[in-house]
Image (cartoon, helix red, strand yellow):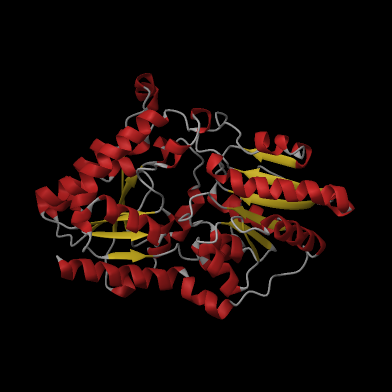
Length: 407
């Protein structure tokens, strides 16, 4: 959602007139943020549809928003495509269940469509772990995603992705799309969002203890982060035994579950318990609103970003964390684009968890950040301009032109 939102102020200047088709906020079960509307230009047309209520669908074990809104999105899209001239359909969401609509519209109206792979659609990672570590209803979700992906991807006209690895997997899985246009685009850095939080009255549901060094991570948890988080907790345990300043730290993990508020299952604290550092850990599974997240990052002392065991994983939240201008620690696989980006930007410490000296490097980095948490990183802001939302939107629009010309 944020990639489109960040691009809306710039699409028109690059020759594209966007119409946004989305679901009404009342049907979204996780935290919403009405203040996000402040960042959308008033001239942009946004059309919102209903979804089937979970009051009824939960009885069938169905909560996925993409499925609940599938019919409503399809029907409204039919009306738009029948009555107006559109050059392209662009799906930019992790609600993959609605993406098959692209194939249906293409067949019905001969309009090309692009999908934006921000995460893997059919994710085979959890096939390799014990059932106890698999998400709820994994067996159903994996079969559904496999079926819908196979139905959709062979007919797509272009792929945008945050990782080249995701594109390579799809092209290997579906040889018929080997020659279609594809583009790797990380999420843009929304500088305007940090300007907005200066003026907006943002509700605060969480207060940090200013007498402690608050090390903050905001984002999902999950067993695929076990390797990076184990490294952090092991290094932190070693630090507690050697450096007294570690005992004045609090590690916050906020918004770690996609489940509705109050229903999330903690995945961070149980891991911390295995290393005996749970008393220094606070995990809040409920998601926070977007602008409250930015506010929390600004109020942190140190920002932590752990990475997935998936070597293609790229954290979409990287740029907001950098824009918070706080000491930063990233724990990622050496193949992740985060490693090279943060190093080139000089935006913080990077530990590659698959390297032999990872533990020593992580412990050293945490100690340095604790001791220097009041220092602002000497980020290369001139190079950072290449990652701004405006620059990324220009690249998107250039890719749209490529897809159009190919079709």
